[in-house]
Image (cartoon, rainbow, N blue to C red):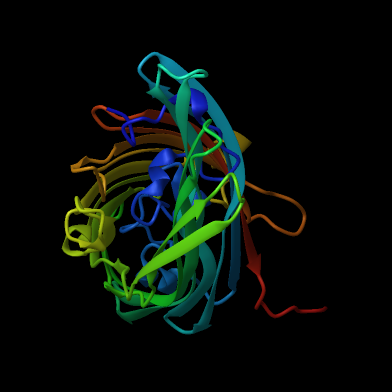
Length: 427
């Protein structure tokens, strides 16, 4: 069994920033929303807290920024994906601008962050062929073309506040927007048979709200523990799901279109994340995160057996994700003279996630990711706090009976950490 029952890799092509044919399901392939500092740690986030990074996955971390700091963080990525189905393999590549975030302090114990990050991506283009009538001359064949573009993003403003020593809370309020355009076109080599197109579209303009908390405590002079958690508030997105049926006559070149619309068809789920990070001698950080997204409680547009377009409770499923990561810097004290390589952060991580959708009643692909990276200090006569983040990721997406994807991704992020608010003294 393959993705649609008749899709073959030999007929697949891709020009979008999203390579996966799995992006035709649900709201697309979900982004991990990590930044340069934690991509080498597979997106570890909940217990990470520092005034030198923008950890938008837990807004409580914003309160760690000091009064002299202004941080800008931007990232790009490039990837090569190998698709495998049976004995057939195919490689595709793409590149994209990923995110842009900033962080600064507005008052004692309060930090503010703004930024734009992706939520999900849709992008695929492939075909399948089958024989309809072998007795005809020429043999009658049918071609089905699947294509889709789009995705969803969020532009956020976040606040983190330290309510008491060691305890911080925060919130991200986002403008959530995007759209997708998915189509399935069936045509034959018979010049008298109509071409049929089924087209799915939606446009979303809504909001997203995420709340976070962090608690940090020094266990002794060498060890520090940080616990963190976030909650994403689920709600209706107020967007309609529209499916259009377009039949075109090859003889008259005229089209007949009918449309069906389902009002307020899309929702975001309640989501929960929790994690811990342990810091040893300001040199080694080790952390663990767990995330749960309650997609299974949501209905989603689908065609049932009688070909009617309805809201179905069997399309989506709950998603679980476990992440582990580590960060090590040989010499953590910037005042100590040391070799350049001892001032680099070395990062490692792994994650495993279950699917959030079903494919024709079967589980979608699970996702296993391994990552490693570096945070390299940028040192010159006027700045020694900015960082170049470079990481590599291997991601395997697979489900029994479906296409297997292996993606190798290179991420590059640049963190500008500037002392904007210091007072200059002139002798």
